[in-house]
Amino acid sequence: MEREKTEKDISKTHQTVEEDCFSQASALVTDWMLDFLFVTLCRNFKDANLDEFNKNLLSFQAISDDLPQNEKVLICAFLSRIMHGQQLDVIFEEDNKVSPLMSAAKIWNHLKETVNDESLARNLTILLIVQAVVVCLEKGSNASYALQWFERNIDLPSTLRVKLGTVVAQKDIYHPFIQSFSYSRLLETTKTFVDAFLEKNPSDYLLKVATKAVQSSGSRDTFKDKEVKDNFQTTVKSSTANVNKENEDNTLFARSKRRLLATRICDIWTPEACKKPSVCLKRLSKIELSHPHCNVKETDGTNLKKRKPRTKWSWEEDKQLIAGVKRHGLGQWAHILQDYDFGDRTGVMLKDRWRTLRKASVV
View (cartoon, rainbow, N blue to C red):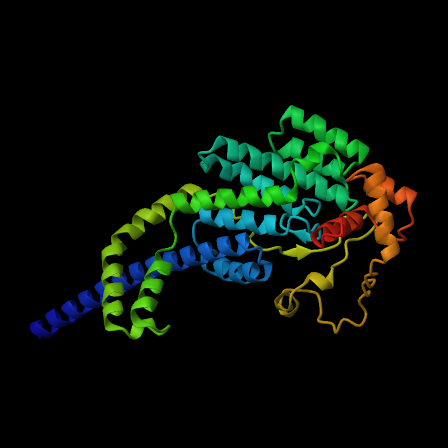
């Protein structure tokens, strides 16, 4: 009887040890998966692949949802807002008037503390503020509200506030000051920040192991290789001791949760305050439409307003555009529109067409 009790105790002890080891190993594998998804998201961002970025972001959010928030979660939230920076109907904050770039600046206010390069941190701050205001001007939205929001929520330099105030008052989207802080420069500076972070915090362990396994086995079915299996199990046992330390480090970033995905998409930039916000079905994904908590019913799209078809540029319009640039100079699209008849075309359309003509070596 006493022997049976001893055997049960031994069996129970072994079971407890196995469960504890499995729990630690699972936590370690979760960290590796998050690292892999983080590197993948950074690569999607640098490749400007929005579809793949959103797909991988869903997986990243599903895994990291119940974990303490750390730098990588904040960076993913930051990159998500930059990717949607020119889309004012994408909402990340409770306040519908806060654009993606305004929300990105709010997150960057916390992230810049971790950047060693002060020049990079300062440049990225200015680029976010300038482009947030410029996007509102280009879309015909309330740029004054964006500037006031920055004054309330961000430590806005006085010189920058004066210059942006002048741009907003004149509504000049071709102001020389704005040209120095373009959206493309914002993207390049953000890529520089991402590269610096990855260099300082390597997150490619799982990629390296998988690459080595693929190269050694010559197939994608890597874990059929016994040697790879043994190496993987050895690594798990030797690395579980670091799991608790990493979890303690993550608690340092236990700030309020940042949304990685837009939770509500609506037409927020209506000029009349009396208009009610309407849900834009064109921007809702199939997942959102089929979600049990979503009040929007699926539709076949027959009642949606059709977008006006694009009008091809004629040779006569190209001649007028070239003549206008010769007369007024590059960037003076508003003046060119006044002197020549381009129909319903805007200054942005003229700028895009000029870029196309330059690529085609027409001008």
